[in-house]
Amino acid sequence: MAGIPPKPWPTGLADQVEPLVTRVLAPNPSPYTYTGTQTYVVGPLEGPDCAVIDPGPDEAAHIDAIMAAIGSRRVAAIMCTHTHRDHSPAAAPLAQRTSAPIVGCAPLVLKVDGPRSDEAFDPTYAPDRVLEDGEAMRGTGWTLSAVATPGHTSNHLCFALEESGSLFTGDHVMGWSTSVVIPPDGDMGDYMASLEKLQRRDDKIYHSAHGAAITKPKQLVRGMIGHRRQRENQILRLMGERARCVGEFIPDMYKGLDERLIGAAEMSVSAHLIDLEKRGLAMLDGDIWRTV
Image (cartoon, rainbow, N blue to C red; front, side, top):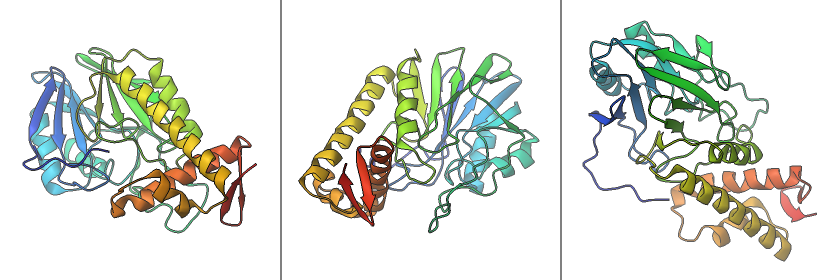
């Protein structure tokens, strides 16, 4: 995980990162969002229409910055990769200002109720159209195809810009850190399968919601898969030494971890343990995990 770089950050500025793509950084930096959520406006600058990907938090200054990046173009679609609170809440107010449909991931309904298990999710998200894997939105000079990538959340989508070979990866693959997988909605088995799915694709560059553009995507995804396998092996080794509760894995697995991220680390370990249990390699006895 990279440290947050020193200011100034390009918050609110329209940054053209490739001919069809403009990036706008939201003012919501944190240990979980890096310098903030990155919204993308896709379409030729002088074209008649565009799409907005991950409109971000419902912050008036950020919505104004997105509108400035849109300019005189018609917004053909507001597209959300998933419904965490730093990604989709601005969709509704932006739709009110542009009359554009909200298109992309499905609304999320958690199947398991836990203590504040839905805290991170946006309850206001109401899409006009849900895209299935392979379905596309088209405009003048641009085509965005949905790539289903469940794991970080069950409803996560990436969007492939067919004209340039770019992939907008939301939080599935980020430019500064590995993604956190948080049960009950996050699923480590699905996350690994989605990484392997991207590894089989030939995208040229990834634009993620947090961090720099990823110019060697296959190399990064291969490393992410290896990192998760290493974490899994760590957990199996530690359980082999002695049975333990989730919190007891953290000191051995995450040296020097920022205290603000301990909860996220525990959730990630829990996701691995649940996946190992599904595969018959671990079992839960009360709040203690042990090998089978």
